[in-house]
Length: 387
Ligand SMILES: NC(=O)C1=CN([C@@H]2O[C@H](COP(=O)(O)OP(=O)(O)OC[C@H]3O[C@@H](n4cnc5c(N)ncnc54)[C@H](O)[C@@H]3O)[C@@H](O)[C@H]2O)C=CC1
Ligand SMILES: O=C(O)C(=O)COP(=O)(O)O
Image (tube, rainbow, N blue to C red; front, side):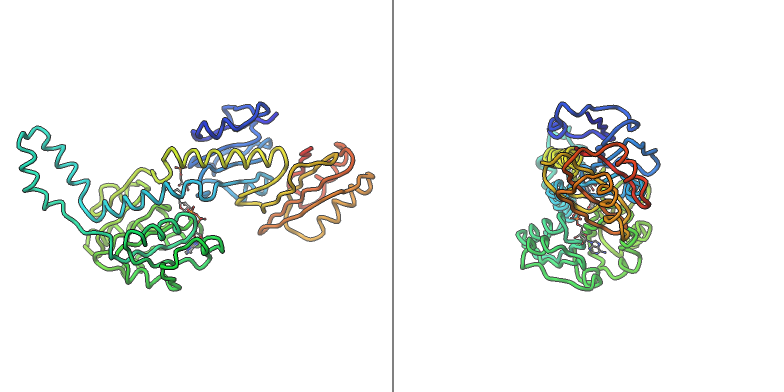
């Protein structure tokens, strides 16, 4: 029996995939698994019971990844599951920034009691006119799940698309339209594009990536879209540039006191992934990842441990060991098992950065004593008897 908790509301179609062996609990304390969206986990006490956290979404900057790894907690996310939801809102953002759609709607509401509104509107509409996106240059920074969808769709909207991602995955590169122009110096995007959209994760290396220097290179007509994270942009510099007319608009999905209400800012309340489809996709993927990890020890789409899959265990037992990525670990495990007269029938060990994971299938029952000996080995973070 496993206990799971939801730190944010998670779509029922996903939670329904938990079998009767899973019980939903209210508190993190005592939970084996946690599902989360954007709730901040950095200051939470992580109980010893917690084996896995699944972020039903992409960004994991709300989760203390290293702290989790050190405690033997595997953190998952759901790559691509909400990408289309974000892509569609990016286009809405481009259109809102190009034509005064909001101003026009507000005008209609303000004039709803005017019996002559149809006629007045024809006179007033010039105040809300704008420009088209077709034929304009779009720079996409970050060509992952979302960036590729945005870039490809923009080519179909008649845009000239520039793409920048020095770490692009092979899969993303395969999916990218060949009409997208490969940019190797991001400054070319800042200098030349009419629309600039950023789709990178928030990391130490990307924090304030769009800084005052980058903004200073942009055209006075440039429109910047940020559906990734507010901290990727030096928003003080952005607001100053907008006020001085040095760029045209900043569209952000992350409200804060710097941008909301500032001249030239169009801000939405983190709506990118808030569609029924994205919420369902994320919840389904997150629950599947948790179940496979709990029941089989398999790891898929982890952000702090390596992916590792040995299918379902068909032997007498399976032990899972989360450990530091240092030499000599496997030899110590097989020595402990050998001394206990336990034969290893299959095993795998995978590493990712400072952390590693071993799955070991054995031909006879593993006793508590053997588990204790494995746990006592230096640099072992967690030992779990999966079967
Ligand atoms: N507004 C919203 O509701 C949502 C926001 N997001 C945000 O969007 C981000 C991206 O999401 P996905 O595309 O799904 O992630 P992803 O992991 O598929 O793609 C991220 C891409 O950024 C690239 N990248 C990393 N550092 C870079 C750098 N310095 N310069 C250029 N490219 C760089 C990576 O190589 C990767 O291709 C998430 O990390 C999250 O912060 C994601 C989903 C919903
Ligand atoms: O997946 C992401 O990174 C998001 O920003 C979406 O966040 P949410 O699940 O809507 O709280």
